[in-house]
Length: 75
Image (cartoon, rainbow, N blue to C red; front, side, top):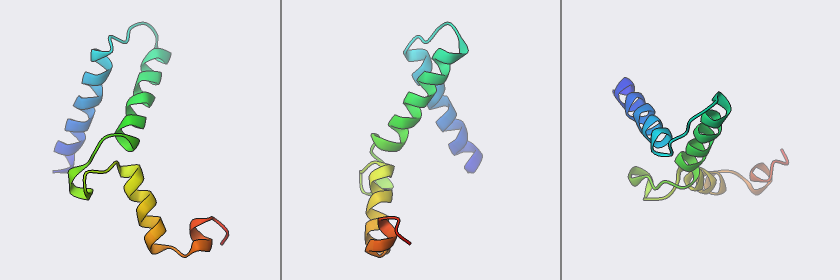
């Protein structure tokens, strides 16, 4: 199962890079990959966690389960 999910994620990344027609050097591919990772973590909606981005879910998790001092990084 884990391999299938990994393969699907890598296929999605590859399709996103090809769709942008990223050509040229390795740096262009690296920037396209970083842009896709940013989208994957901060903008896409994930149904199992309530149709919100993973980064937002993580933020809500820490607000709910950590003390105010911990969530502010003071401890």
